[in-house]
Length: 481
Image 1 (cartoon, helix red, strand yellow):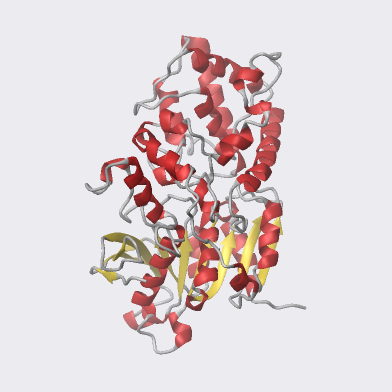
Image 2: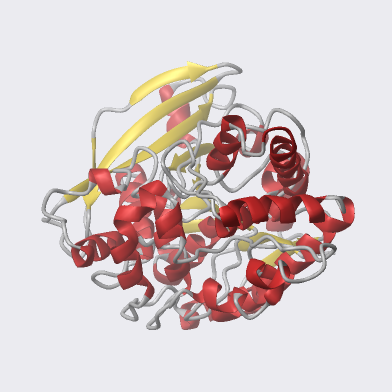
């Protein structure tokens, strides 16, 4: 494993007494080749001044590390409330990492590729070093976990007591997947693990996951059209327009039928939380993803009725609600997060095509009372034509989709004998991480306790952080009556 070298951190204070320490670390691109190319990894350290009056006090606060969802998303600056506030109130300092390839951590895009990376195969090989595992050469998810380990040693390796060299981690969604990889291969660095909507299915290829996810997406479509029955006709009119016109988005992307359906990715979210960056509509209503999609549908239908075309504002809204252009790792490495020795082979595309409810070619031939269903958190090969910033990566994406050389993400034997306390929030109606598969995972990881609820969706940690964190910390005490 490589080592981390850090530059002098920059510090400042935000309101309500939070000291921010912005840290940059230099780590190997490939931890199997520590003397080779280096990349930068960014971590934002938040220290509650109410808990640490002096530099010495700061050094005594235990670290609580947040692992971001995704894959392919950075972490926004946190304030004194929300998740961060609940953690700080319990005597921790927090560390918020931008995973490699995101945010300030050597962000990946076609434009930022190293000059020697030119061909589709070279791009694919480079991208594989951004999957989070990489327990073997050219196997990437673990690399983000390895980044965490070398950063932990840089920050805590000087501590005299072994217990003080460990830290607590929490993974939201895909961050939970990374936490399970961490538990599998580096449990010695962990004091405690929390997860929210992050009990990854322990599978070697994503088909089974998508079989379950499609069922949940169908249910969310049923909820959507039951709440907004007039949207059946509106959506069909919008699809007819997109089907017969070449609609360009502001950044040069194409708004196709399939891309419009991808707005359903938001269906499993509640409150203001969404999978990607804040949408143009986020200030209009404090409601769920179903309501946000309805607002876009209503605007589009109104545009077509008034002008016979979609307005710039509507096109801008759609573009900003979809994160794949700005976070290409989210598209290219989305299915490989499930792969161990098998190829993804465009899994979601194959599973969705089994159900005609998602097929516009089928639905448009039926009565106008038949709804077209939106898709969920899924990646399709057509996206590498429709999204402007994904187009140069199309060849590499195809190579990755057919790649079966992925190494292990998890060590089941280690998980079965795990001694690190694991506490999770598991959502019964989760549209993104199937509850059924989560329960199999929970049964595999020894020393795991769950808070299971059907009152929160996948983004529950942001919807009600105070109650959720209270419950998780209470469960973590393991006080049984």
